[in-house]
Length: 159
Image (cartoon, rainbow, N blue to C red; front, side, top):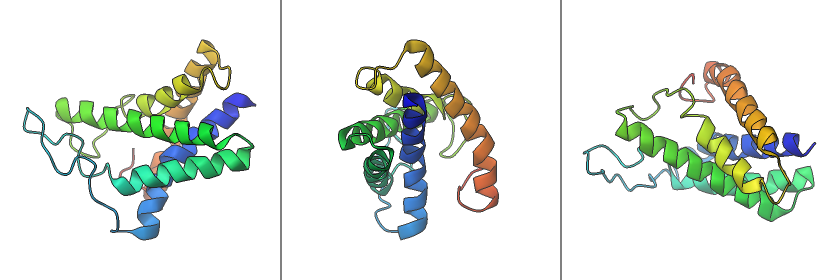
């Protein structure tokens, strides 16, 4: 049950920014990196990592934690670490030459699920094998659901 709860919190952390974009559209869409470039001349993170996304992720995981009967601080930790993993993924993708929104299998899914799972290791008494299985399940689920959400114009990219 605890792994399902962790999986659902991670899903909430990653879905909330998408629904935030749909809900309030252009507001709070300022990029986290302020449009800054890194030493390589590429954006630090890119335009899709916004204050709105982080805010919706944090609030969304706190609300999801409440629904799941988990303390709010576990939800906040999950959202914060999921967004940290997502930002690291974007930073690395820019360094590797991927455009914002470009597909990088594994790099797009693993950090945003593995970081929160590692953070929940102690508080939820997770095992290493359970963490790896849950991160793997998240990767597979994301690959399955993303094209469907794209078809319904919920996601901007099919991956």
